[in-house]
Length: 111
Length: 114
Image 1 (cartoon, chains in turn orange, cyan):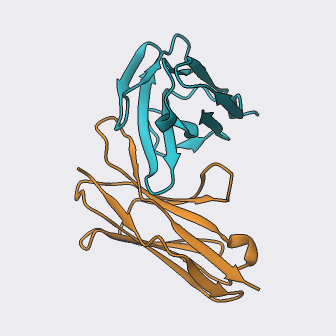
Image 2: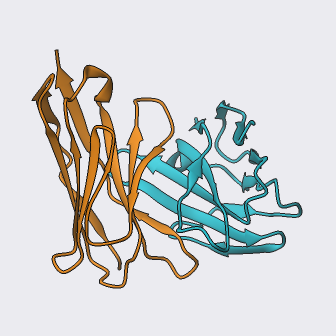
Image 3: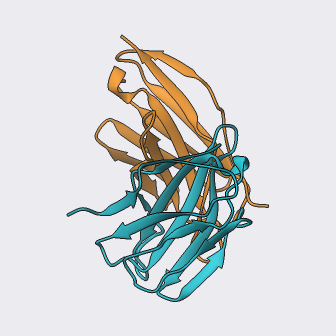
């Protein structure tokens, strides 16, 4: 059974700080890694994807991938209260290109 | 550009009734997916479809039926609703081939079975 593990949180950070969200996955064959943001009562929204080892930056967001350790993380710099949401990690793992989702980490950014 | 729409957005039904949740996408994406999201379980795949007339089971297919006669529509039917099917249902789609598995989600349907 392919799995994606995330700390459920809640993770609380002060406004302006760096939020660090972590995810581990079980399938060494996974090649594509995604971070979705989900506000309460809303649908998941794709915010980052990464396919190669290393870092990928997009604005205040940085995704980090370490395939040897089967670990992917999301850093949010200069955290804002509007970043308060649940962050879902997902990896490709199904035979038909399905995504396997973690249960999500709830982030709270305090003003 | 509407993307993915789902209807109804909210539905209350009784145990034993049949209910159909609709999903429509305007991108002509090949792949479409149905997930349910429950506290403590996260997103779980119910069914997916690689193209019109091609569907397959996901992780939790029991009690659900899907069809896909047209690329843009992927309805999900609960043949005889049970309380355990109370959940939030999300439809998603992705391009294939050539894309790297990114999926885009509809707004969701909140279903309550009484």
